[in-house]
Every structure is written in structure tokens, then in C-alpha cells.
Image 1: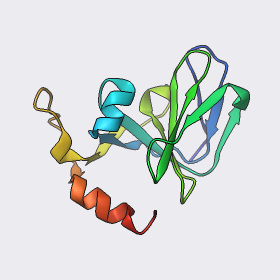
Image 2: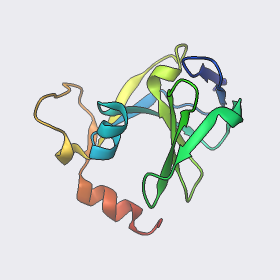
Image 3: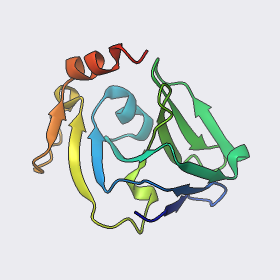
Length: 138
């Protein structure tokens, strides 16, 4: 897998992700929908992520198990980072050259509002399943 490159809207933050997985997930939780005004379409990027312009990254500790990063200049959402593992989930739209994109998983599927629905056949995890998964990681 080759490096995937991205940047925020204004270019103040540049990103290189060595392990961006084109099988992306969608999170329907209230936090993600509040953060971006819609579900979070996330590419799993692992831990091998480097940033140029780190002084422009603002980090918000959004839950017990994760934090969110955004550009302090333009507000672009940069990542959702799992605290225990250091793994990054990054918006799929940041990676214009990532090939083979496929929606693979939907998180908090029971929290998905009734005003939208995807027809993609994916795996799904409910709130209870997510909480059980993270229970031993807090």
C-alpha cells in the first residue's frame, strides 16, 4: 500500500497516512453528526500518520476513548484518534487520490436518524455493541 496524502482546506496542515484503508466506515453517533453535521465517513489510517503544520492542529478530547483533531485555521476535520491504540480515523474526503473506496461498516446503526439511509450492504454495529467493544479499552 502506498502513502496517501491529504491536507486541510487551507493547506496549513498536510497529512501522510502510510496505511489508509479504502474500506471506509460510517459513524451515525450523535457526536459525529454534531461534529460534522452529518455522519462521519472515516478511513482507518492506523498509527503511521505524519503531519506537517502540527501547530495548526487543535485537539478536542471528545470521549473517554477518543479525541478529535481539526485545523485551527480553516476548521477542517482532520481525525478521530483512539487514545488507547493511537489509531487514526480520518475523513474519507481528505484523500482525493485514494483508490478502491468501499463502504464496509456502519457504527451506531441504531442511532441513525430516519431522514437518511444508505443502500450499501455493510456490516453494522449498534450502540450496545460499540460500548461493549470499548469497555475494556477505557
